[in-house]
Image (cartoon, rainbow, N blue to C red):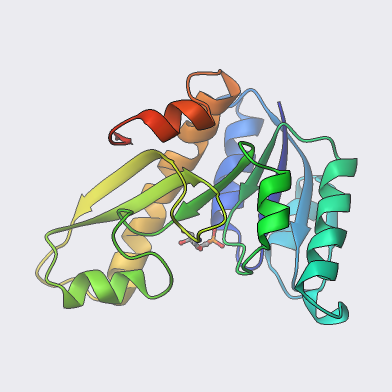
Length: 203
Ligand code: GRF
């Protein structure tokens, strides 16, 4: 399968997917990385693994529509089977999301439907939750609300703070993202399957 990865920052999830492809754990090839920020460290990860990358800087486009049109064109050129959002920090237009319906995947650091949006670790701590986690899901126009594929969970410890939780959640993410992509690549789950299951797989 051909993967296009979208990232804005560090790209540790991107790295986990690179590693899974390189070790053969994932039968897939990352054909393109697209970033929207020139300082995204993900660019360096791509370079050191020989993965083609493109910078599409949102600041150089007049509006969201123009930015999304440039993104869609670059992605379409790469002919991906799956488009993987890995810390991509821009809200995409409905038109973009519909164009890639059923192929666009995201990872979110909470047990969705809990805590869509930002600051998920602080919100879980404030609520006194006993469990926290991360969710891989299909992207639909409503942010962080598309059909979930898999969730990874962990227990919140008494002495956890935002930083410690964030770090452990990253560990969960690096485990579940390659797993979810493996299921997609092998046809074990698709958009309709995810949309009709009553709750996502928990690993
Ligand atoms: C992850 O926590 C992901 O869930 C969220 O953004 C973060 C990206 O981290 N969407 P990284 O850039 O992959 O390290």
